[in-house]
Length: 115
Image 1 (tube, rainbow, N blue to C red):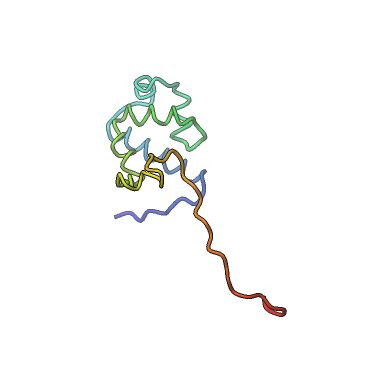
Image 2: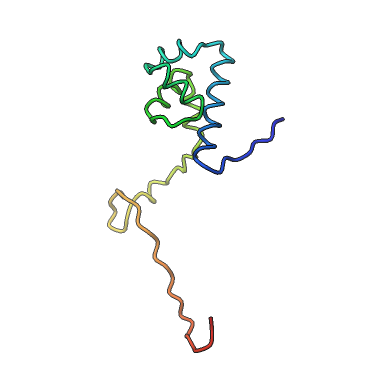
C-alpha cells in the first residue's frame, strides 16, 4: 500500500491531480487526443492539466465528466447534511448566507505589568 503525502501547496496539489488523471486515462487505455476530443478541450490543455500546470476549472470538470469520475469528485468534500431546523434563522426563514460567530469577551480585569 502506497503512503500518500498530503500536498502542502496549490502547485503540489495540481501535480498530484494531474498525475492521477493521467493514471486513470492510461489504465483505461485512452489516448490524450481521444480524451481531449471527448471532453471538448484542446490537446494542449489536457497535456497542461496532466503536467500539473494551471488550467481552468471548466477544463478540469470536462475531463472528470469524460472519465466518468463525477461520483468520486463529489464524494471528496464531505456533504455535511444540514437538518431542516438548522437552515432556519431566528425569524423562521431559510438562511441565505453564513455569519461570523460572535467572539466571547474576555472579562478578566487588566492590570499593569501583565502580558
